[in-house]
Image (tube, rainbow, N blue to C red; front, side, top):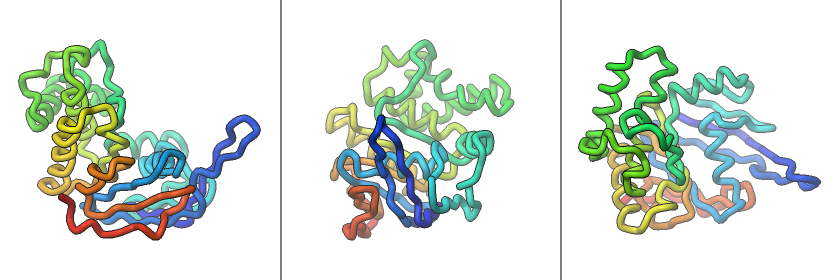
Length: 230
């Protein structure tokens, strides 16, 4: 599904050059659930951005389904993101003036899909994540866990091949975070969705099939099979 070959990425912050990734190699197979774990500044979020075509490497190759996307222009990257990748973020990134249904349906407006079909698809997904009775509620009327469920439904609306979750429980209490991780695990177990989870939380990482430990822009020797999740 995903192959990174000798990927390097650096950023300039003022007069300082930060090497976020340093010649990194990583393979993620179809239907695998991988957790990328590391301290702040280890490069794990940069890695997720490159896997998700939000950024491109300075060096190396990124292959998605066997296609090298390393040299894609922004239009090609945007099209890939819109069709193959779903994103779940720590801060939910919902539009506060829109209802749950409208937030989930929004990405479909860029694909020429009719309003009724967009709403039908969004309603189906909100039912799936347990929010069938909250479709008309705006984010301010929802709990943190409910907002994250809306975010997950929105990430799935384009039927992506891979779901990328960046600290999805970071703003949630432990019980609500457990519910969200069980939902994400179920997408992998029951629907065969490829999942890449970025987290610093070892309890979240335990849901994955495989844990990839990062430090200083590289994968450490601590990468290991997790025995099929929790």
